[in-house]
Length: 558
Image (cartoon, rainbow, N blue to C red; front, side, top):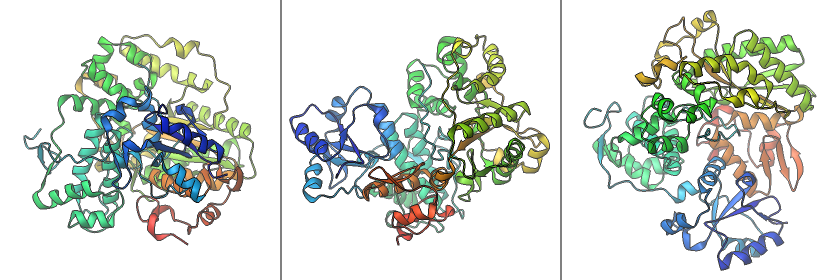
């Protein structure tokens, strides 16, 4: 049936007369309506009531009324729409699709495209060395679908990108500043549009000479950003990029900490706290209720440092050697930005599997043994999940960190029952032995990182910039069934934008693509071979190094 493989969420509300008829059409043709955020996924399409969307100009209209009508949990819905890059269409298109017996979302805008703004009436900043004209709870939810979130910046906005050939640095720097500014205030759509434009320009092998050229040549550069690029080229300064005020600076500082997202950062701003020490002294439960934030604070500086390729290889060798001693049947391979050829990585992604092994329990057992042995030999510094008894290995470090703040260890770490859920992935903080790190050390890379405020340094466990002091790195271990190897490689290689584009392409062709395989009407078409998945999607096999940004959209059609 036409809508059997997709679901729909209706915004801003289902309580309008026109909605009932459309809902009946959707259900009659095999689709379903979702209200709960837990039901939103890659196959969800966003339906927007027609009075709020100008599809021709790709603009959200009557936005003030729209924001009044949306449900209370809309911020979570926004995060998921951004995570999955969901297409947005007018409600009336359902009737057109039913009449034409064809579902096509390939040209539909996402919400961040609908909400792109022109910031031309704001203050002016000179683009020179990143300086302005004057020279100056509970944890936020971490979405677990891994799409290489640190490929060009740390999860909370640490600048790291640069152009491939040294071109366009002023433009890249300006877009990075705009990205960080809007991320700090929780404006995810503007933040993401600047981030994507920045990434596209970083991949550009030639100097950009006009905004029109950038708009024509590059993905994610629309009219508004094209105007900004032209202004930078013409004047060396940009309207709409004023110095961050103190509130934005605080948000930016907090959001560079692991597990602190815009929701917590904005809450702390409203409480008028300036640093983590302020939070501990005035609102201690904010830290005590989230041990992940405590670890993020402890390794704040280390986790903002980029990882050179040579060091990624050294980390892989350690994991691979221990895995081989556990069982010679298992294979490990590095994925993520490393296999896409990036010079540096934000974190390290390793996939583990065994020939002909499709037993989840066996894979989970080996992963657990591997993690425990890596803890025992001192390689793992901390464990960033709370769903297994491996978490007990974190207790000594966390007790020490909380004690340094004169806080007791959270009772939940001691009293919570151990989950029986099979663990298929592990998120870790790891550190190389000194001798290994010395061979990988890069002074230039290590000089660029986010620094803690002086008041917060006493909790830091980050390393000094020295070949004798290996920093803690973030390592993600994943497992997959042998029969799903191709789909898993495709997913964990990334980039995030490449994955979003590929999955939307699959949906528009009537397929469903996940890290478990390519499906049509509930039937598995392919999961083992990447090449065959590409064939089903009407594409040539796209090399890893071409999955970073842009070129895959036009170069690999069969």
